Image (cartoon, rainbow, N blue to C red; front, side, top):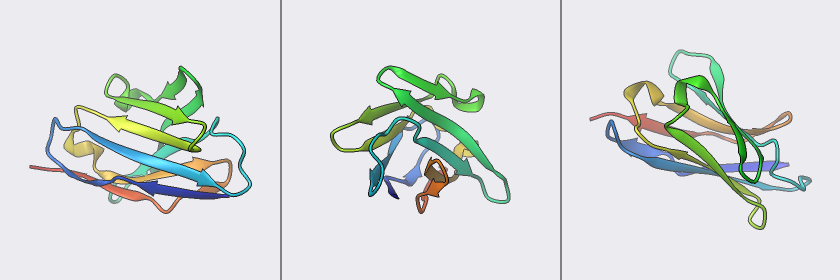
Length: 110
């Protein structure tokens, strides 16, 4: 299983950014793909999990600001981030079972 994350970058506070995770290899569903993040000096934490069409689990710190969408044809899960805050600065990783993508850096700063 390979997970390719992309879309990170620099964004101003209050801005929006999408990060994408494309799955390939021996994976036949996008259900259960999660996004984690790790801030500088911090521990990796769960952000959101794609359960299925219209069903996602968004964790407390980002609830109301982040959403997930999935594309079964493209084997892709996209994390849509709005209302970004400096404390959202982190490397964002996609995960499926015990497989991890390489991470993409999101920096929120003016």
